[in-house]
Image 1 (cartoon, rainbow, N blue to C red):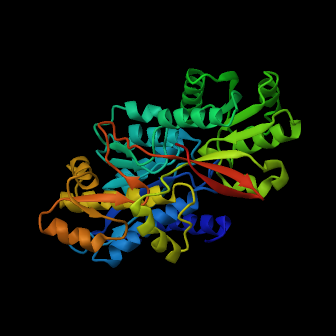
Image 2: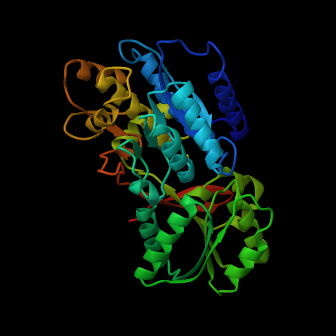
Length: 404
């Protein structure tokens, strides 16, 4: 696995190359990738981009797409935190790069902005590997916006159950004031109260500030012994966490999956983080992950890194849908995506592109079982999923297991 800084340089290079004249051929098939390469989740993003591009590598090595054409994956940087940047990046992919589909974005606000400003008007299907805001389920999207991570409506229920099972029955919630933060914080609060817990305080904060001591002090004054942080580990979440540790007012620290960032391990003292609970979206025991593991290892990827499996699945699913659709056109792609991702059909696992080509050529149905699980999209483009409990031990994230 490459060092995060080196990974980031490689991915940024790919972004620059994607915009150079002559970087792709006229008959290339394009699936765009959107992610916050810069901004508050930047340490999480490079492995996700790499896994997304790995799907294209497997496809091109096994016969290409639509009769042997090359699949290329231009990348756009949403910054995660800037809706205008997300809209502009998506606009470039849709209207300049002429992509058939988009894998992304990652942050929920970026996905909503990219969809509303570029993808939906351009009739472009999107699959987000990581956007979890409940608001995405209710978008008027013409059946164009999908995701392979579960909604925070589900994650909030599971997190509440996990905390209460540990006897953590009184919490304060700090959340970043955006679609992701508010959606998950509201879900945690509602479910925690419903299941008998007490939310002593809940407070929003803005991304990008240098000082959150006021917010930390306000939350601490509630007397809650447990602080739940719903923010980004390379942004406000890291600063708020550091200042909460300095204040020493909380007995237990908890982070939602946005806090699962290598930045907090690298920049904060291991002893201060010991025992912190962090959640991860994923499915640890699925056949597709077992197949994907050796493929990821060969490519230098950590199969257990956040949203790596979802990144791969997003591109592979979109490619299968394009092949099923049988043409380099955007029309009909949603229907084709639903056909290749759900029963009935012969199961296709990660990396099995050549097998899929043969089955589709023979007019047979296929059902992709991905590295991150089954993707039987409901009418809103959502999938079921699982929440994994992680804990920080010895300066590392350690997987405890799926929260039942």
